[in-house]
Length: 423
Image 1: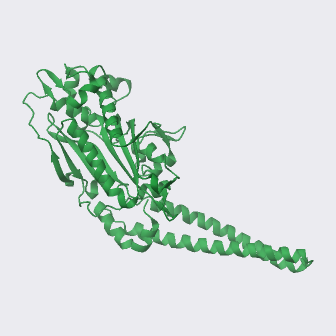
Image 2: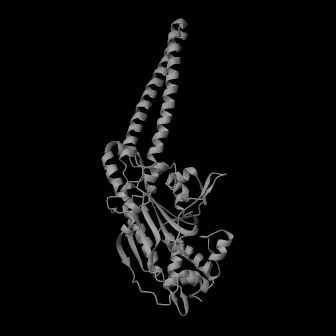
Image 3: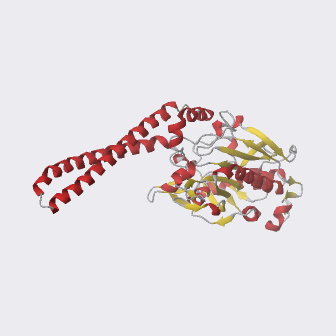
């Protein structure tokens, strides 16, 4: 959530920066300023009225103690009128607060100055390519055909027991999936992250805290009877571990990692680009999360990008790093880097990781602060990244490593799988 002080002091800059997101926020920002001003005026009137009521109560008490009860009667009448006025002011203030909250949660985070202009992923800026992209052989198969050939992923039975987007991994496919999860977690632990195993469902406050609500309400699976949401990523429960928390400065940075199953409705996703493992409703992912001091958050972002890049290099996958444009930037993010692996048989790049700095946007919603050396409480900065999402990694491993002998497992994974080839 944007800090209201930023809107009070720099509303023109806020409007200008949100244009990078292709958002005309003028009316919303100006409306928010008006409601904020009204809210503050109502709060002052209420505070002044309550102070006057308290002063009258003391004066009335003194009069009664000194036997001057008759002189207290007019003051009692005045106090009763003020109490009614205070009640009316409180109701108006409650309405203003509700309107303020309704408006401010509609504003996305402000893009970092380095975010390029653009409307879609086609406008993202490629900043680095790593590894050699080798054209696929003429007879190369896409991963969905390889999965069937080697009997390692069953899309049809997943559709039968649940629906499209819920594959069943079996045999060496299940073992490869498990190996990837363990490998990714081990890499995070080596990098200094603490492992967590969070719940797979969260409450409304948690989904609001990290920015999924109200922005992505329709993209999450909801359990109405308990008002709980299936997590779209373990970023949500892990970051919410620190909701309503004041950390000590020497506790920062906090570095967390977690494996979880993730659930996304992906409403409106159709066509060839979602075939096979390209886009699923249920998938596995290892997440990394950091909480830092504001002045250190972009250094932490670079560190996280380097970590993900290192894992992809160990998997021997060609990949590229892109900086997302304003039109493709997530609602809560200030700056995001995507890592995309080359899918040989499909002849295109597949996103496997997003690493984002949210600055204080999430922490303002979460009331996540830290105490400085001089005793002041400041909002921390939060960051998260996929390290990594498994489906498209699996797809790229299958497609890029197919040969006459079978699917060759990268050396870094062989100690985890216990086999060198899928045959």
